[in-house]
Image 1 (cartoon, rainbow over the protein chains, first blue to last red):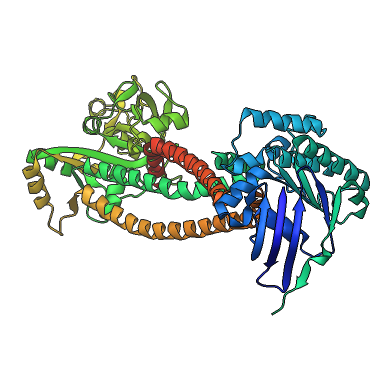
Image 2: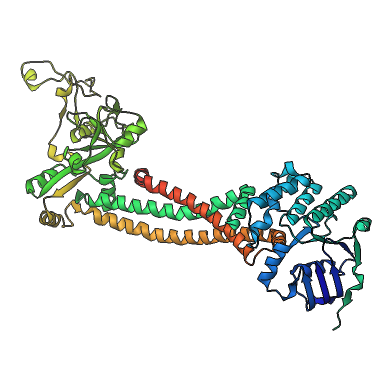
Length: 222
Length: 389
């Protein structure tokens, strides 16, 4: 699913430099990325998603060289291929749970909102246990319920890759395990690969593989 | 469509903020438009009244006061002109004089003593009752009728001009015999009576009981001067014969005289006759006096326009700042949209859609308000002008 070769990236305003000689993720694989803060975990996710472009190297996602795409192509690729789950859920307060799940269809022409998509959103919500709360706004949902909505939003487009950035970071221990299991279950049903950044070492045994990121961070040489 | 959908959802969820922004923007749009409509209508109404009154005869003095008293029945009290001036116009054969004596009031509305020619001249129609026919009759304007809740069969009493004026201007009860159809002009706010009725109010004419005729005195009647003679406060079929006037009618007063010349030439000749500065009377063209007044008002209006523009710019800047701060608060939402693959410019489109929706709603409200003002402008302007009177 993902194949990274000789990746180099640096932020122009800082001394931070990320260098990943090689990294790969197979279809249906579940990989956790751990590492100290500032080691570039989130940066790697953004590079894989095409939000950032590498200075050197190649990033291949599902057979597409992401770094070679134009900005418009990267956006379309991201919308159609990748599902994102964030630590802070990133739900929109002014939309109901149902509208939040279908939000990706409202912001890009790469996705078309069809009746199938609506039915899929409904089915996902039911399987995540929030089928009866679809008309509520985020402020009327618990944190666990909000994260379930975010998971539904990440899966509704049937992505081949799910990127999770501290998706359980804001949840209590019980909820963390339940949400992660739910994510795995849904990703497995959708046949999607799963790449997660986490600080929570208790959850690591649930992943198929763990990548320690401390090895990749370097201080840039002037 | 998606941008509009999201914009509408955002505005609906933050309805209080949206409502305030919409109403403020609507007010900014509405106020200058409404002011413009009312001013234009006022200008038209003022000029129309002036244009519909070819010439005005009155005592020499302020032309504006004379015009305001005779055309708008205002509180100005120009020196009255004697009725001989009316006769002089008749005798000249150059036009029709219509006396307007607007010196008294009743229940806050001006009593206008005039001749029947006035109703034809102003093309006033009755919505109820009949016209003036006998001494004491009153025909009231539409606003007088609606404000006082009076109609045909009711009566009005003239207000005494001065409590200490024991010599004259006694309250006279006048039966209402007709109500005029609304015209959105000062005529709606007037109580019309025959000129002679106005003179009765003024004390020039009166009726009283126990009148001793000269024949009775010659026959040896023991008539003595008697301060207890009852003076009538109401003109009825029984006492109307006793009403009479003292002195020569030529000297009786009228506030002004509307002069309708037979043609342009007659008008020019008439104007020439009153050019002499020593002449105690003057003949003015109300249209030119009103035009001067309107020009002055509209010079002030241009200043008002500048003030309105400055306020509008400041208000729109405030709205812009509110919208900008709102966008800043939504930076996280924008970042999420980008991560989820939002197309380039989508965020700008979303924010533009919100602004467009807000401004569309504001424009709609302002347009409805402007339409209401435009529809009622004539009535409201009539009312505003009557307030000034």
